[in-house]
Image 1 (cartoon, helix red, strand yellow):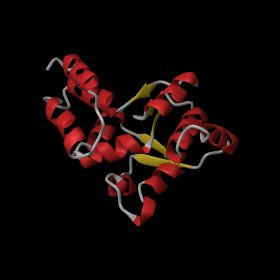
Image 2 (tube, rainbow, N blue to C red):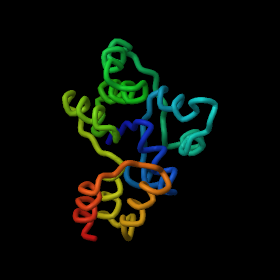
Image 3 (cartoon, rainbow, N blue to C red):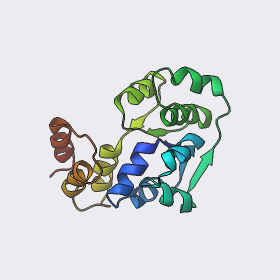
Image 4 (spheres, rainbow, N blue to C red):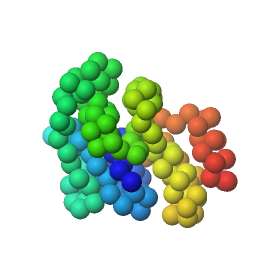
Length: 161
């Protein structure tokens, strides 16, 4: 399975101490160069930057079709645009994104999308996490992740919590 990730799932899972779930769920992950640059934006080391740098199971790729990135940049940030371009380039089975506009663009491009909440639900479903309630709370409180009450409750329902 070819899985491409944007910055958000990496930083949010790292911020709540669940970065390893990416390896546990997918084995290997692909990220565009822009994601690596975003993890070091402003000279700051964002959550996930050290993890990505040291993970032998994450491969960083340049984008071959810059025109796709340029078009996507009209509505998306650099990392999102390159993540979608990389997903097209690699013919990815799944792209990891959280931002709604990027998710709409991915769906328009016929790419299968999953966000950090979906990752947590999947991890619970296959037994990698005993509960997701604490991780959802941590996303809100530690990572500063916006999670609507409706999505929060739906995630708990899907996880049988």
